[in-house]
Length: 449
Image (cartoon, rainbow, N blue to C red; front, side):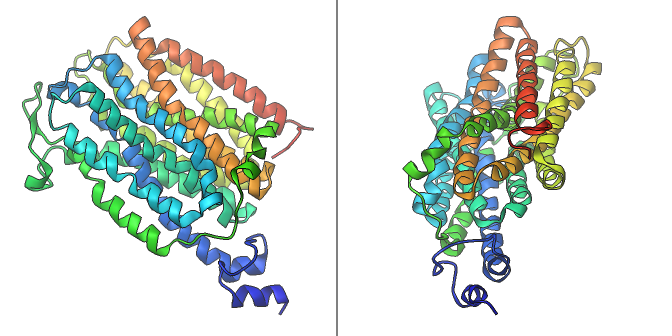
């Protein structure tokens, strides 16, 4: 047996002078076990992060009928503000894992989710709660959005390049399911006092007359967050891959960091922005028609489809290359978006199935593209740069969860429908197809991948 193999079996990861999962012996004997445990815990934390990040997308839809005086712009703002904070937090979170280590970062980041889970649950029990308080708690929900960059950066350090597409796709895909979970669970848990007296009283729906415990949509996450926080503190390990911010900041000199940032904004920016807006879009576009749909009965489908398709995008990209898959996803998003534009001034509910179907195609394609772009990054960059690039691109793309709801809010208020906003998205997809083809997809591209 080689000295490398002997060292791998005799030493723990924390004792080794280097962490090298590309070494087959080290991967089989040490790294794979540590990587799988880390992936399991951080994925659970990421799922809860997305659930708390997007809780407002499910809660806001119910507030107007419970006595909260909120304008259309204010409703879209409450769904957008968590995206602004989450995206901004992702910038420092992109670098802190290599500075402080996986265990303390993931533990504290998961614990931070208790602030919105408890705070929002208390605030939405009173329709007289000032709007600024609701905005402040929407800001706190942004903690969940910031966690993505830290958790994904950590995972990229644990796995060899050949397995990163699948690992990152699985983590992000399951993590993204948190959006669908909160939108699916909310209508199920707000109809009864599931937490008894400790959960607070109900509010009456002024339209249906039903009693609703809307605070349950936030309180639901308190116990799972506490459990995963303890698991992270006890079972996670920090591997010996360290780099200062200055060392990691070299990515800002890399042209492909900026190109991939734009491409990932196209995919994850679309996913997060539409996930935050979907329920309100259904309400604003079809809410005044006879037989209008309950937005929360359908909104969870978008995030579900986008989340499930993400690991598929990463897996297929491992086989045929990320650039090809990204180009196909962009083309699908473009075609579906152009079709949606013809449906946002409906005259009857007969157009709703087509609208829903086209939106789900956009979610599906964005999920595929999320997986393929994150597969491209570890191929383009060396390991120590790939981790902060993953975090940085995720940070900027998360602004989509702020920009897109605000864009829809402006389009509906100024033009009476979201058609103009969808048109702007379509133009953005065309630009991204050109960038992806030129730099990564064509014959003779700078970095074919």
